[in-house]
Length: 131
Length: 201
Ligand SMILES: Nc1nc2c(ncn2[C@@H]2O[C@H](COP(=O)(O)OP(=O)(O)O)[C@@H](O)[C@H]2O)c(=O)[nH]1
Ligand SMILES: [Mg+2]
Image (cartoon, rainbow over all chains, first blue to last red; front, side):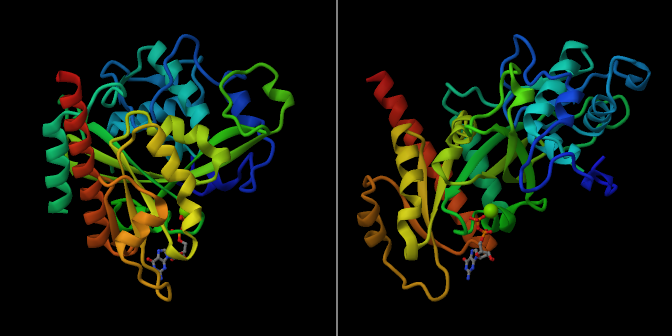
């Protein structure tokens, strides 16, 4: 959507004005029922069985786009929002729909309450040094 | 484009993702810092806001409220096929703190960028991370024309705890920013070790 330049025809402007269209897309929902808020760095992965989402009449084009993007390579919620040029809240709803339809799954980042594993932190330091 | 592409029949690698926050006042160099190390041009995402400055998370009455957006930028560093670090820079004003709450959940740690010409701009961020025990480091972005203060003077002016690292940096310089990020992770490690120690003793 956004990559081809068409996405610049915003339904909200950069000065931050009223927003209408994202609500239409999510039918007014801003969070999925019963769903934990997806972290911005949670990674969305398309299920192998999600072959032909275009054929599903219940899915919006944006749903189909997410399935396609995350089939090529898993992507974080933040990246999807940037790629689709949609607010994060809207992307969360769309992902929630897709999880519900079992077309994608979401891998959670290190759980907030847990201390990150020391070996992971050491890997991060070494990885940064090697950049 | 992103992580390891799936080869035919082989499931794609699902990486462990981590995040570091970049805080500080307007114009202090957050976007510049993210851009200096990110493998992608800093991306912008937007969050919907109601007039009250709260995120939209329920639908009742939303249609009638004016909704606005707030932008934050983020960058990505793929450390390994299965290990990806994200950097998030968001507005430092207090009215955007709901975003900090969300972003700081599960964050490895934070960089508070400071400009010695207006140190007070980062007081709010320092307070925020101190109160929540989120490990942070203060990076003093050395703009030309700003007097070079020794790190210790900045520490005193910000009334930082002795263990909070203060480093002079240049947000435009990749090597300098790498050092800053390494400093955050090292500090986070020490912080975690301290907490583990406290838990087991
Ligand atoms: N001279 C100098 N300029 C810088 C430095 N860091 C950022 N800038 C400039 O300061 C301005 C604001 O930086 P920006 O990253 O957009 O700040 P942000 O509002 O914190 O994201 C930009 O024009 C940058 O080019 C620095 O270390 N030295
Ligand atoms: Mg900026």
